[in-house]
Length: 339
Image (cartoon, rainbow, N blue to C red):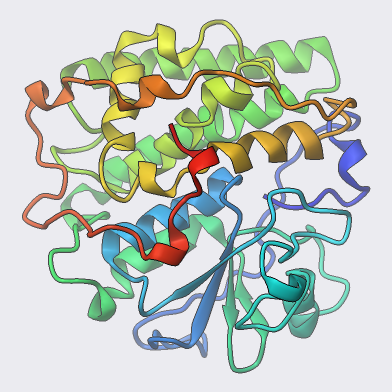
């Protein structure tokens, strides 16, 4: 999720097109792009508001990479200079020493296209951005960082299921992850209706699939579930109202509401979600859509903790592995962001 090139007021005023990741270097076990996997070398910069960044936050938790890969959390309200570290003392990230994420981008390259987006992986020694390729980053955390995974880490991208996972993720990306944005930032009625119809057409297909099985692919959690979760967890709070994806609420779909609650209550998922950051970001930053900046009080979050009964479908969340432990104290979501 980036900052708009023309400022926050441009959201909803011009046709929406998702930027490709301009910085697509990879951190790999063999270091082939010049960035070897190394404990303590990189810092993951995220916003808890952003669904693309939240994928990386969840992966890092599930794989137990907290000690190997430090994490910076930006203010959910970015300004036209980009994501900022105003949640930290002196408004600076304590590890990188910068006030704006754009400073790490500028150290890597000037006049780069596409704006400043999260998640961003930054090389701590040089202060340079390594990658903002949100599609590849989590796959690499699962497959290239294995030497640093915790004992009992799940296999989030099992080799035998990759073709099916890739197919499901591509469909979910086009119609759901990105579809809600195409609906929300549409500048014409026809454009909006096409995107909104696509969102719910895919959600109907996913409902049929998930009525029969606990997880999207196979009988364990995979990268596919992470990518669907980060959109679904935001659905009723922001996409239903703010982005006008309002044919029905997620809480009105028995299967998907149970599925997303099952994930939310799984260690590593819900304990990364900050509803306060999510709501304040969308409603206060997108002034082109919500000029008053008023943040709605609802929906009531209590339902997230209610029984889901999805375990009756079987499935082994972590396969042969184990759940992650509790998040580090400094990474706990504040009370106002939780049910």
